[in-house]
Length: 280
Length: 314
Image (cartoon, rainbow over all chains, first blue to last red; front, side, top):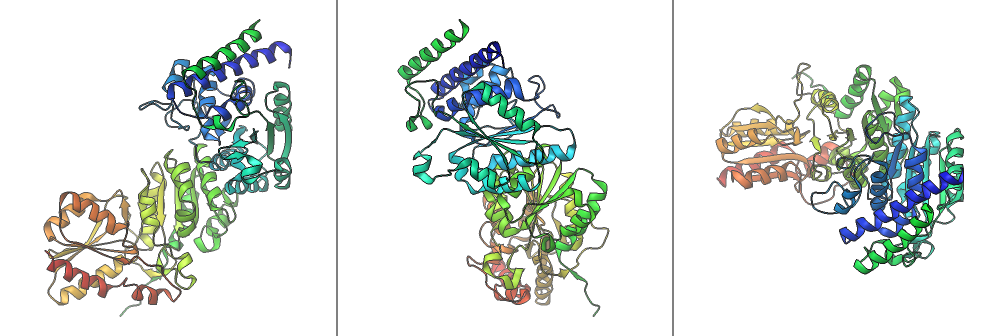
């Protein structure tokens, strides 16, 4: 990827982060930590990787995306807004009564959301079903799912992993946002799902390890996944929870806490400075 | 007396899937390592490319069914009632019910008539679980023909449907012209003294109990409530008004099933005595199905006794 394009994507990811802060601040609740850690992954998927049409969100030929870690809905909503599925202004209605932006994604209410999720472990199974459907339908759509690393503690993830490999679903890519933190602490302290790449490999998956905030590595991984035949691909993306906002980085407390007015101002100032630097 | 033909409703399920598969190209059937028992194996044999085995993993089974349905397929996902409605309850609720996806859950081996396998496999809670999910249709057929046509009716209906089938061979009540109409009860016998609202294999017992009551001069109305959700409120309200006492009969816990649904309805707008015949708040046990049904009070004699109690409460 050329510098120009990397910078362009980085600017969008920064705006996605600003959207996350904006939305969770107005909602007075939500999950900023994991939303910030997945900003580049989601930006790349929605701006570079997936076949989609914001004017026609139900286009049958589109690639599918399932936010299996449904609690990072603010990041998905922010990227959908950036991509033109709905206005950025709508982000301020997150979690409010009557809003189309539910606390966890609803495919019935939000344009661009392909599956309702929120209960961990379930989204990956649905993505597997989508990939199977795409294979049977013959249109060749790709299916992408984003999982949390803590989510890998759910047994259903491994039921889904076993099934996807057994059925040879090579049009399926599961991305693990490996930020190493879950509500009760670090994932190895709570109930370690490590080693993650070895587990997916043992389940018969093609495994790629990348840095989650590096667009070149993200691009290489997705291109390799597209070319790979016979197995589903797992992209294990090492990330920083709270990435981009200094006082949120690697702080487990920011898993599910919204910024107050002072924290909001500080976060927006930091992200604003990052954006200005990228626009320079 | 002529021999009555007996068939399990699960056999109707398997046959209907095969016949539906011939008409409906976008039909997919999933199972969880029980294809021989649930009878989806018949579909697997006829259409191997449209059958997928999820193995012993019912949570994933329901998620895969949900995903397939978003790609435009009509999906039947099968397992025993205990695992389809029990183990995978939350997957059915969140991945199928909440987004109101077009997944049909074909649950076999429901109720105490599983018999010898015992309590771990005798699911008497599935109707209660499934009907608590908003937008879920819950159908419990009474015989082969009703079960067979229920599969076609469910496929036509947009949205999630829970179809409850049994393992035990039961008498055929309806002829080949009969077709289930989801949400519409069927009055099988006229009577003004008491209403017996039954579902599933208890419909046959309800008809028999009406005979017992008739011998004592009591005229019982018998309703076949194959659809527990949406409930045929009109038929039940009319019956409550005209007979003044209701007995429900189901091969399910007395908590939260047909009896619960009827009591909730009538308690709100037409309070009459409602007595429930079903599995009392206990687990089942191993034993031959007919014997278990009798031991747990799921028979005509018990329904008739409850009917007399209900009448006395008028």
